[in-house]
Length: 507
Ligand code: HEM
Image 1 (tube, protein in one colour):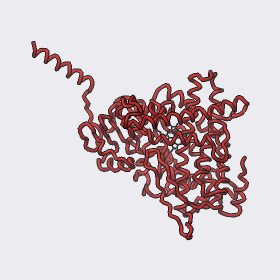
Image 2: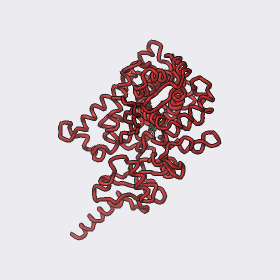
Image 3: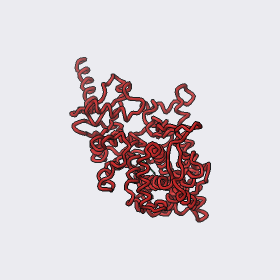
Image 4: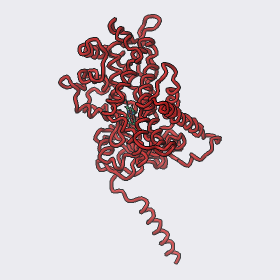
């Protein structure tokens, strides 16, 4: 009797175990040696993760890696082939984002669709975003605003070149604020620019895996006064700053609309598309989409524009080549969007800046909603997936001497190589979650880079003894990077250039 009870209990345990853990027939992708319980915690690198992942992938001779931290599975895709297979071909299972407890719940970001899991809520927000940011719409409605902000940038750089980072930040924030909210931006110390920067400064802190609460979600319930619960205070500050960002500019737009202004904005167009009750769920979608756009545009373009300034100062021969092309074609006028096709080297400079140092080297994390596979490896459901964009954009088989800044690599027969440009677009991610702001971003970057090159010479600054100050671009090491401040000189190229700059009066 006793032995039959033991047998029955044993059989139930085996059944439950077998049900819960279906037998895997395929192995997991390779990765470093795993330790009991903590898994790979000790070997997960704590800085420049993308460089370390690329090295480990080469050591393992595999373009896909698997890590495990306290039983949580992490997959890193290290090649174009792996990324397009998992994120494009298997997009039905790989288009979600991980439910990062810190960012989504503790910091209150779950209303931003960039971090939402795949599903109806995400689709509703992305639809509102895409109606505004698809390329034909952008050409019609955004380009005039981008042109105006770019001319302001040229004027600001002329007036106080040492403050170039402030001016870049102003140009980007004002172009997206006008597009999304239809509100004008003050020449200096605009409160809406402070709002977005305050909200963004918390983002790095909430990145998935930075806090134990992401590994042990029950920690979100511990009160803020318990020692070690500092993340709760960070969460409260982040939630407050995000709520301000979502509400304040939106209310300004509503006030403008009530006065019959602000009509050329995402908000006005989205409100006009449906009959939206005040404060109802649809209004929430528009409000949150607007804030996601404002947040998404800021750091990304700022990083690439600042890096462009550093690379131009460091590479005078490349700068001069672009200027020769601009001078020949423009014949003493500032560039406009329609000129882009005729200025391929200038476009190549932009592509190369974005290729060399992607702002988000590991993209934004995805999560697998079901089991997948790649090259005979098992990809477990629930895994967090990182795509190593940095490694993909430095693949030696596509870009020779990938660590060199060489815009001409993008040219074939004097035009942009379409095959290479398609490959390059991976800088904006893959599949259903690919960056929906990419056309706006590329328009903004191209126009501003071309305009700066056409009227300014960028060089190294000199110190009080007349010695050149070296530039060695340094970045923060978090997953959403910033270029650390540096000095450089920005001077008008000629008297004619100075005239053109003076013509950039506020439109
Ligand atoms: C140089 C500029 C930019 C770069 C390199 C960039 C890159 C990226 C990348 C790599 C992703 C993740 C895609 C994925 O998961 O596969 C992303 C997502 C996103 N980006 Fe951008 N981006 C840029 C500019 C912008 C701009 C200007 C906006 C807004 C106007 C924007 C809005 C977004 C949004 C909303 C998402 C989340 C999409 C979703 O989860 O469905 N980005 N971006």
